[in-house]
Image 1 (tube, rainbow, N blue to C red):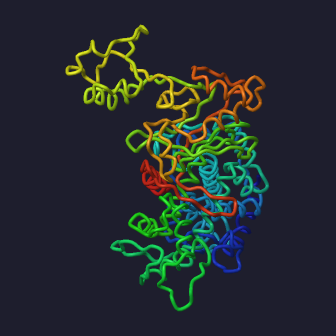
Image 2 (cartoon, helix red, strand yellow; image 1 turned 90 degrees about the vertical axis):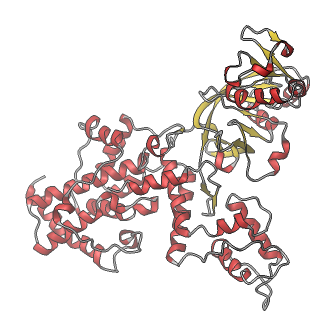
Image 3 (cartoon, helix red, strand yellow; image 1 turned 180 degrees about the vertical axis):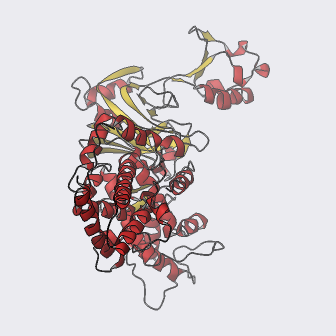
Length: 548
């Protein structure tokens, strides 16, 4: 492009940019900032024109090195530049920060050009550089995440979004698009869960702009239905902010009535609490989470979705440990759901993807090494009848059975026990009636459990890492529904005869175990799960620390 033409474009552009920056008549999407309006930022021109630091080194390297021959950014008209600036201003809609894309540098350079009335060659070079780097940064952040999961959450091993040559070509196409803002939005995750969270984020930003909500005294002991308390009116007002109008008897605003009780149940269900309708310590703590903290949690979960592959499979299983839920999706629609029990904080269910290849009915259970060392051997040493009670046997590595009376248990070391311990199939087997197998390094699978009482709880971190579900027969039927060899009658017969049987899936099913502490319905209603593994803080810190 000729320098004269580009000079004219940028000089003409500045007038439009300054209108966007400094007038209230600018379109709202271009004036958006965390504080509600874009304002000029002070600082030197040198600082403004300096390149922002880059964080996702693997992705930026791919763009700048592998993609060198593919990329050819052309800011060849006013509309494209305005669209790019608009995309930066609008980045908070995806939980991102315009400052990370050096919006202040663009503003200051525009101000400098406006003051002089013309764009020098150096101004042109600086503007192109700022726009190129903003596009590169925003495309990477929208496309694969602002921070790397390897740094922010090293235990996140679920299937990642593509960052190969196809992705680079997508970036190239976006750079050359007539509408960079729309092209950038096409890089965002395709999952409806991401779009739903964006709606929730917009709603909570609106609540923040309106002033948020009041907090409650941590000395508040308990309020429940039928009681009168001076904080009841404040409680009703607080719940109305996020849940809508609540009826009450005029003149008796301090009465904790049935309508308020019902809305407390809703609040508890939406905030990862045991739903009892009583406002006690845990509910007060949840009520006192500020709207800005809620926004940070939503933002962190938008980031997690940017880590996840767009292609999870035509048919796949999704387990969200923070939601204690297993779901099956087919062609983008949910077709099955089950309550899940997940690992404790000390024995966390890992985040990973694998392929379910078979299931086993009436399984036996070989006790995993960690459980053997930490639980079973100590229990045997304390109680000599433990093996008999649990229907377990000791097995040598050559497959032979070992008489427990032949072992001097007083001198057994749990860390160096030379045998395996197996539990026979049966109603009290730790795996229940069915286990669903998908190879992984963690020795984790989905299975039944004899401890049915655990499913009556809303909060269910009770396992040693595996995922237990409440309706294994239904899941097995669902996965085998297209296999004529395994109709419902034959499956029930196999379960009822008590013999161990392996059933190979004709079409293996992808399994994705993830960790999302916020999710939303299509109407924007947001749910917050308890951060049982304390991972949100680390991710939120990483997102805030990565300031460019």
